[in-house]
Length: 209
Image 1 (tube, rainbow, N blue to C red):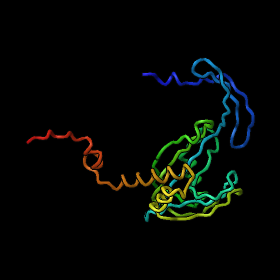
Image 2: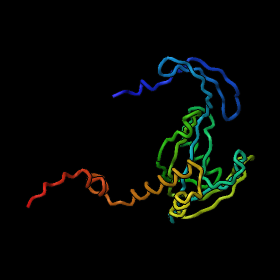
Image 3: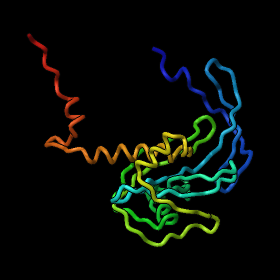
Image 4: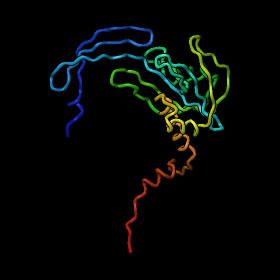
């Protein structure tokens, strides 16, 4: 079996094309499998965190924004970029949730650490499920203009499946949150496993007769 090393591209050198407040664009020279060289245009991003806040009634809070890059209005889960490289993404998630919605959560669950556009960008987003919520005052950034909506999580997931929600982090976060909450509801036994996983561990008896 051929290993992954046969697919690896090796960084040789690079130069910065643009250095902005949010991203840095670099042009890299890489060695590709077979020994040839190729150019890659790479966007360097510090990363971000995003939150699916679900209250005791199963309602999720979504944020309405205008995304000027696409000239489209979107419904998204609360999210924001890391303030600096190496910032704790959970701390970022807590900050962004309160800034955008005024919500605080007593219970946090990490859902995933997703790669957004691996073809040309280093951005990764940590996704969290936030529950046991309390309402406080929102204080969005001066350059953020938001509108909030609370809808049942099941309805939000239906909107994902119908193609009505298209933001990638939002789609994945909502689907994973629904699954995570469903797993919490499953009864557990002495071994700590829900019935589905516990049955999967049971040996199948030989059929006789």
